[in-house]
Length: 226
Ligand code: HEM
Image: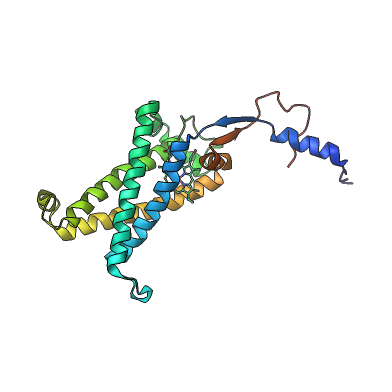
């Protein structure tokens, strides 16, 4: 017969505290966190206003020029947050966002893990190969879209060679539209994995600190309890 054991409260408390043990380590600097949330909010505004400018949803009855101002202002914000992160990386000599060949070699194994064909992810530096590919591509396409944005803002007054290079104004619009779709396809994957993989990494993106699991031997006196 199955018995459910009722534990005394203080003992239960102690068991729970033991399971919470682990190392708390600092993993995200204040500048990374300011960059992250600033860039994330800016991109949400840029993409939604960009889509509205591309094909206005008339039922929203938004003033076109105000939407354009919001689009441009938040693009400058996003560029500033990116500049902040770039400076921070230079000062701290932080290469955690730069994909290296040895990171990319683990990509097939990482995909096998995401598609439930492996029980554990392959070894990684601060970010895994999938994160590195996505983050790095975001920076590149965001800079490209901003540059094309400047070319269209000046309406052929400056940067006219960019118009010629890509094949005209309509082409600039299409490239920026495709970049928005790329963001729209990848941001939900990023949010989904942040919420489902290791929630303490998300905690670190808010507080700066993440909780690593206890070292071996640290918790051997008590069974794991949830
Ligand atoms: C609710 C929305 C979001 C959540 C919950 C979220 C969560 C996270 C978490 C937890 C990390 C750290 C990953 C790790 O340590 O393994 C991260 C990193 C990152 N996220 Fe997000 N994110 C969100 C939206 C966005 C958006 C919209 C963007 C921009 C398109 C973005 C860009 C990045 C970048 C570039 C990094 C790397 C940070 C660095 O080291 O500088 N995130 N995010």
